[in-house]
Structures are given as structure tokens and as C-alpha cells.
Amino acid sequence: MRGVVDGLTSPTPLASELPAVYQEEDPFSVRLVEAFDAELAPIIATLDNLSAYFDPRLTPEDFLGWLASWVALELDETWDVDRRRAAILAAVDVLRRRGTAAGLADELRLATDSQIEVFESGGSAWSLDPMSPMVGSAELALHIRVLAADPSQVDVDRLDRVVRSAKPAHVPHRIEVVGVEPPKKARAKAETKATAEAKTTKPGTSAAAGETSGGASDAPADDQGSRSDGGTTGTDG
Picture (cartoon, rainbow, N blue to C red):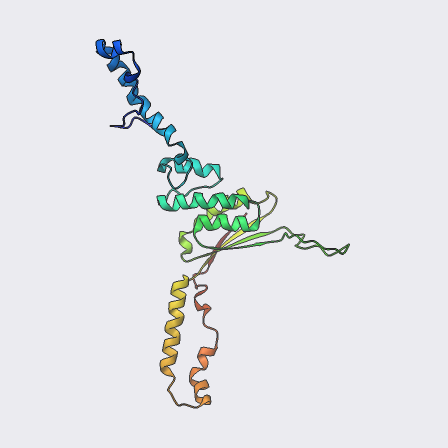
């Protein structure tokens, strides 16, 4: 609720609407209605700017949770204000795809700010041939993989609530959190490795020598920065 705002004046003071005889001869009546101006000013200001309350970019901070409930979004109170505003803006788009694998991935991406992979047993297709094979699997399953730079910062219980609210109730699910290196760090690591290998290769050597000295570079690097050795965590539902 909006309360009394110190120093806020009403754009339509009630005292100015009194008959001239009261304004000039009855100071008590003037002071009486001026007291109502202080109470009504925030209400009038709110109504004058009502459209701003429905815009996540402009609404007061204490209204963000109310707007989030309109688009079925659970806000994390540890997020800063800018991230909460951005999440509500994006959730409007996500709500259009709610109930689909892509919509679930987008919703979890908003909640974790991480890469999301969704694997499901369902599927849909069309064919002109009668008795065409069915797509998907008869065994219901939903597997969500979260690729996070810091798995310890992922609230798995919160993700579980998001998944349960978005998936069909009869479909079991599993959430897996996998540690990965950030893309920038992975690229820097690969560039450093390439630079080190270039320095160890002497100019003018034969092809055979080059293969001997640089053979290790032909082998696949240890994950090349895609996944770390931090292991995985998960939950079933």
C-alpha cells in the first residue's frame, strides 16, 4: 500500500474548491479540508501514474513480487532489483510457452542464470502414411541438466518447485546439476594452451618431428572448458 508521503502536495487541493465565503471567513474549515489533502495526495499520485505500476521497469520495488505473481514467476529475494525487473520482463514471453520443454528450459534459465538442457520422453510428429511409427517413448521421463559455473550456488529445491509447477503431475523428473567452466575462462585456457604449444614447436623441423613434439595437441583436451571435474548433484521427483 502507498502511505502518506512527506511533502507531497495534492494537484487538486480541496480547500480551493470551497465556496469563497468559507475560504475567506472560515479558517477552521480550510484547515480541516487541508488535512484530507495530505491523505489523498498519494492516492491521486498513484492513479495519475497507474500505468507505471504495471511496467516492471518503472514499478516501485515493493510491487515487483505482485507483478511476478501475474506471470507465475517465483522471484528470488537474493537477486538485486535490476535482475528481478529483467526476470519479470522475460517471464511474460516465457509464459506463452509454458507447458513445453522450451518453456521449461527458459523458466529454469531465468531462475539459475545458467545453461539448461531438457530431455523428455514425449514427442509429436505428423505423417501422410497410415500406421506410421509413434515418436517418443512409452516410458514417461523428464530429465533436466543444469550447467552451472558454481553448482553450490544452485538452489535445487527451488528448481524442483519450478519443475513441479510446470510439468504434468504424472511425469517423473530428475534434476542434475553439472559444474562447467565459464565460456570466457574456457577460451582463455584454450588460447594459453595453443600459445604454449606454438612456442615448443621449433621452426624448420621435419613433419615427423613436428608430429612427435606436437602429438599431444592432437588428442582431445580434458573437456576443453566445457565441464569441470566438480561432479554432479541432482534430485529426483
